[in-house]
Length: 300
Image 1 (cartoon, helix red, strand yellow):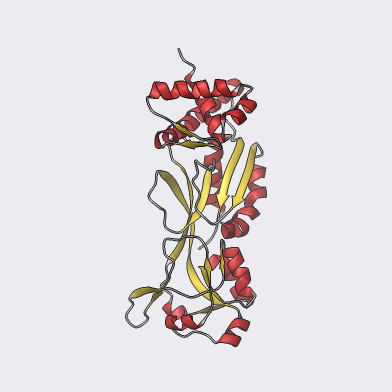
Image 2 (cartoon, helix red, strand yellow; image 1 turned 120 degrees about the horizontal axis):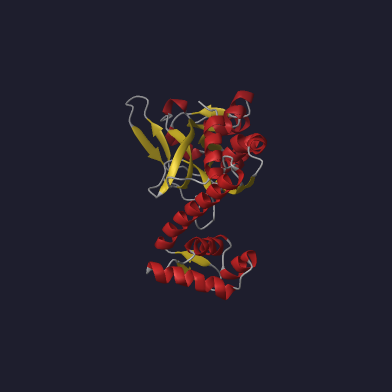
């Protein structure tokens, strides 16, 4: 009988290491042997799993599905063997790759890392902070923390927190440029904005007289790729910014930033999820981390 688990392990290694040569070095095999095993799997399944180029490997849609299943099956095999060999419940272990938004990472996640590693010392955390949306499979990431509406995909998600959004500016900026009293007045101000494509590039508002919601494009001369930078620039008196309240609540309490246009706030929510490639049996390290976040992220 073919060693299909072994072939799965080779396939996963090829994808996670970005090529046959790197996978061969890790597994102690030649690149040609890696290539033959992957081709054998493709022949058996009757479909290409990888698109090969001189620089890297790209998963086909079928390859992405196979990668998801292979990871799950290999994790189950590892857990079962550990349970039988030790007679104890398997302990979460191994490298866990996490991608999180910059603000959530800095304000919420990083302070919890010592506690998590104390609970799970066998897990090796690999954390990247980036606000743009990544492809979990292409980036070989186990969990991503994402803000805002979730796109339709095969990913599973668990809600971590939610909070309102607010437009803020520094007292010095407002003293120099005036406080806008209506959304239309923002055309006379500098509005600090994100530089990556979002589901909505305009700022939303609600008419206090009618309750109707509307959105307006806002002008600005400064763009950045994460909320932490925009917060810092706002505190340096460069303009107004619209961020989740958890980004700026400490600055508001300290008087470093001032909310504006609150009468026009549509009270929309910034919802933050942990997303991951979904299947019934998650690797223990992934389940442990998500459960830990749900239990420890405290925000109204």
